[in-house]
Image (cartoon, rainbow, N blue to C red; front, top):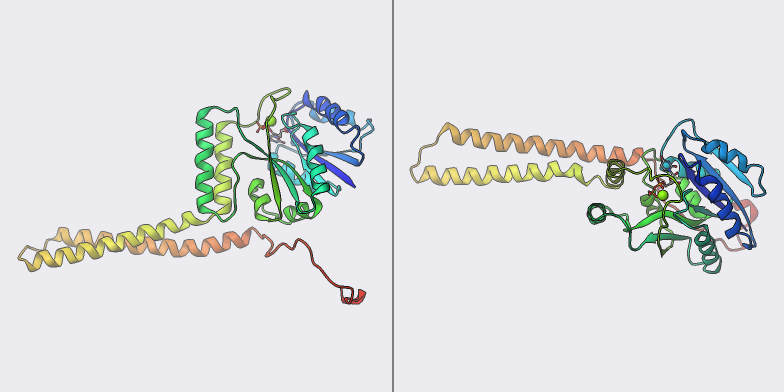
Length: 315
Ligand code: UDP
Ligand code: MG
């Protein structure tokens, strides 16, 4: 049995040696093989230099060094692609997530064959109230509009079995929102609570603006519902036209004068409604092209079971 630790690193020069020695001590008595796959995500500090120093150590280390900063999502993808373990853990370099807990995840997977993934989530996040409010709202909204389940507080700190890693890698979409992908691919995930430690060194790479953009990624990546808004608005406009038409007919029948204002209102409502309905129709085609463009697999089989009557030649 072998484990791969996948570690995205962006400007983590001070944390790399600390991370390495923590892993070394926490995994001293692990009793299985492991490798560390570091992804240097275009760091502008001495991260690569620190990583290269680790090549002389006794743990198998692989460094994937990006040509520029592509973001944590891309770094995670590259790490998974370059991992070879039967189990794979994604863990941050800043020691907010403890390697000891990763070891615990592996032990749980080893003893519980019914699970394919152990994912850590933060129960009480020490974040400011505004951010918590924003995040709560995001999760409510996204869960309402998408079929994929997004779990609040869930992190990328997870340990997978190999088949689930392959499933995630089979989703080659460019705009990645991994928390959604991990859920989309299915399999059985067990969520365990954890408390994020303070960052060992340096600062978080997430600004509010970056988080907001990331949230949009999650939203637009998993639902095409907004494309239907035009249809609803168009329907309402046509309904308004009908109501106004009846209202005007009744009024005129009772002797009121028909004015050019009446025509204007009706024309605006009718033409506006038809325009919006046409936009919605385009949206429906666009949604289909968009979903097809992601090139997601049509299904993901967890296993394919055959009996021994199945000869070698039959596949
Ligand atoms: N990271 C990365 N590329 C980026 C931003 C972050 O590889 O563009 C890495 C970073 O080095 C760390 C992990 O992703 O190992 C989580 O980042 P950070 O600690 O800044 O996020 P937070 O813990 O505040 O959510
Ligand atoms: Mg962090």
